[in-house]
Length: 369
Ligand SMILES: [Zn+2]
Image (cartoon, rainbow, N blue to C red; front, top):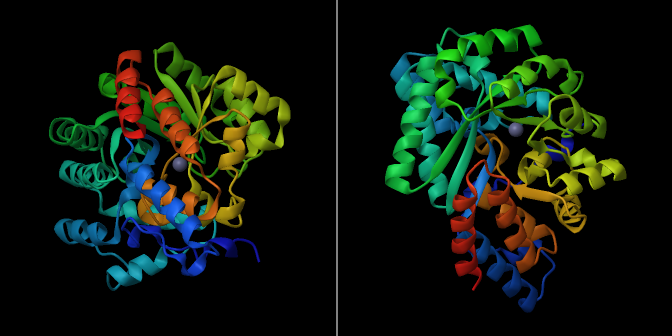
């Protein structure tokens, strides 16, 4: 039965703490001690998160709080039953729950509260820079205008910088299951807000919606001077990654797992230094990998790919960015050097100045001694 791999994923976000439980892992005392040391290092090191959908940070508790505030009726009795509904088996089932959750986001303060909660949460993970996607079309079709969406998110990002020291970028992501014409209409609506955006992305269900479908709208985004990123090679084939490079002129690739199926493409991504924003717990939950010990992240690093670790939709996939690190450390032979490389890649792939990158690397080096 397809998809069952994701149905019993461990809920890393609920584990917390700095200690790995040895009961499920065949480790001797020395092995356990090493993994716990790596876990503490991963938690302490500064890092950027480059693949995060703000709507995917909607925790069930907040969904109920906003529903009550806005008089929206959720079709779930309580927080526990909503959390149980997060046990989906594939990308399409996830997207169905995800878009239902959006229904509680109606006012500027809702977008503020959602974004502010995320920033406070990742501050605990020593995330110092975030690049956030928002699915504007999913809100526009519910009658929520762009000024409400962008206003709330931007205000929280500003407070995040002032109160938490977290810098940020905001990326408007087009929904690929909709038409390119729809994306053009959204871009027209976004014109008064272009100075508040830092880039454009492409997300939602990948199969049957290749990057080439959006070549013209991304050409316009490029002409307007924006950076571009696109989900590719998550469920889709390596060819979708090639299309994103050739037809969209992307600055980085979101996911990119299936790049590994094409040796020439791997060589190209390495030569061009393209960042891959990889999301391990998301991959497990959506059955892109069957088990965490089969995740290709270390293989990507060994081949010279600039892979990074990200949480994608953390409320739905079992954890925030450090929970992703924890899952990797538990199940793969991650080294100290790998952790350094992953954090370095996260800053290298960020859309920030060379001066800011140098500052982040300086702080990273201090942690690694
Ligand atoms: Zn994503």
